[in-house]
Amino acid sequence: MTIRKPIVAGQFYPADAKELEDSIKSSFTHKFGPGGLPKKRGDKNVYGAISPHAGYFYSGAGAAHVFKEIAEAEFADTYIILGVNHSGPWTCSSDEDWETPLGTVRCDAELVKKMEEKGVPIKNTPHHGEHSIEVQLPFLQFVSKDRTKDLKIVPIMIADTKFEKIGKSIQEAVKELGRKAIIICSSDFTHYGFNYGYVPFDEDVKENMKKLDGEAIKLIEKADSKGFLDYTEKTGATICGKCGISVLLWLMKYKKAELLKYYTSADIIGDYDNAVGYASIVFI
Image (cartoon, rainbow, N blue to C red; front, side, top):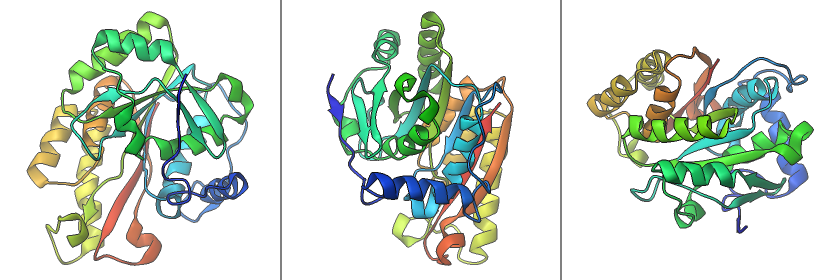
């Protein structure tokens, strides 16, 4: 089994294991975080989630909300992580194990192979330059310390809007192998400002970003895949993981969505000229 090496350690999060663990702990206690470290694992169900993927300085507190819920839920056989493809048109999985400063996370290669049979191709190379899945892994490792040897992932980058086709492939493969899976979609929300080529308003940026993302979140809470994609098309809302979110919504159409936290990078550094929204959502 080949290993996918980390590409944003030392950039999005610390490259040193001790510093990384300290950064994760501080995300849980951050003023925008859940307020404390996870308690012991329970038997409640978390079926899916949306977690941000910026640098931990910005979005770590948002991710902490999601992973606290995952930490206190029943442990899953597999964690399917739906990432973005920021650089190409490929929807594809990876059958490599993934390394972070906290160790190596095993890939559920059997499930990846089953998904390939259902129509999700395996392409490792596109994953080597993409950060959106990688940044979720240290949090997942941190909250899975009690089950490190059992931890497995299925990394999939989603780059098209065929949400039903992709969703069915995932659903059928999981069912046929009898896996208990938690599906985590890695996505930031609106990217506002000239740096992102998106300036639909130039006044009341904080309120307008919250409104723009808020309408998208309402559609997420309804698990309306098509409505969500139509909304991003109509508004141009620069939600980078919109394709993955649409797949997640199709899979979560009978689950309840719960918004845990919403804030923006501007809430961290005060810069509203260029800002990114972060939403933390779980499906229970």
